[in-house]
Image (cartoon, rainbow, N blue to C red):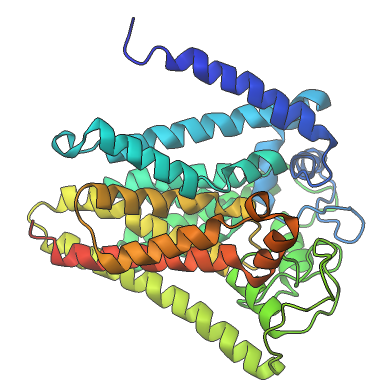
Length: 430
C-alpha cells in the first residue's frame, strides 16, 4: 500500500460528514454568510445592484471582485450550495495544512516524528481555534487564508508571485493590501507594483465581464455605499450593516470603541448587564481618536520593525535562501495579524489566520530556538485566546469577547512573532 494511503478514506469520511454537518445542517442557521455571497454573485451576473445596505438583512459589503468567484455557485442547486462550499473550504484547509507540514519538514535533519506531533497538536489547538467558525458561518475567510498561504509559499522562496496572490486577496477583502508594506520595506519594487496592478485589474474586471445595467462602475458603488462613511482606522459602523459596539468585532478599533466610548446603538448579540457596561472609561471624541490612531500606528510600526529585522537577517545570512524559507512565514504571519487587527470589522472567523503565527512560532521552538520573552508572549496569547463560551459558559465568554480577548491574543501573537524575527537577525550567521 502506498505511503499514507490510509489518509484518503479518512479525508473522504471527513468531507462527507463535514458536508452534512456544516452544510445541510447549517442551512437552518441565521448567521450564514454564504447566501450573502451567492446573492451578490447572482445579482452581479445579472448586472443588478449588489450593494443594498438598509434593504437586505445581511447586505453584501465586500469589494466587487469578491462577488466574482461566487457566480459559478449560482449554478449549483440551492440545497447543495452549502455542502459544495464546505467542500471548497475543506480542500483549501487540507492544502494549507499540507504546505504547513512541508514547512515544518523543510530540513529533514531537524525533523523527528515527536516534533511533528507537537507541531500539529499546538498549531491545531491554538492556531486552528477559529477555523470551525469559518465552516459554521459559511464565510469566505479560509478562501482569504488560502491566498495568504499562497503568498507565504511564494515569499518563502523569494518569488514575485507572492504579490500576485496578495493582490487577489486585496481585491476580495482589502486588508491584504498590508502586504504592500512587506514588499516596500524589503525593497521589492517589482512586487510592490505587481500587487497594485493586480488589485486595480481585479477591481475593474467586473465592469467588463458583468457590466451594470445602469452603466455605472462596481468599484464606485462599493466606495459610495460602504467606504465613504468609514473613518480611517475606525471601527465599522453603518446602519443595516455594522454595529460599532458589536462584541463580534474583534478588530483593534472595535475593541477600543467598546472600552472607551459609550454605546450609541445596543448590540443585540450581547445581552448581559446594561449596554456599555464594559466601558473602562469614557474618552472625549478627540482623545479617543488620538488613542485609537496611536495604537493602530503602533501595530503598523511593530509589523514594519519585524519585516525590517527579517530583511536585515536575510541579507547578512551565510545562506540567504535558507533563512528566507524560515523567516518568510514569520513576515507573512505578522502581516496576517495586522490584517485582522487593523480591519474596521474582524469577526472571530477572520482569526483563522492564527494558523500562520502559531505555526511559525511552534516550528521555531521545536527546532531549539527558544526565547523566554517570546514563549511568555505566546503562552499568554494562547491562554487569553482560548478562553471562550464553549469552555467558560455563554455569559463569561461574551464578557471576555466584549473586552476583546481575541484582539489582545492577536496582539500577543504579533509581538511574539516580531520578537522571533528580531532574533533571526542575531542568528543569521548560523
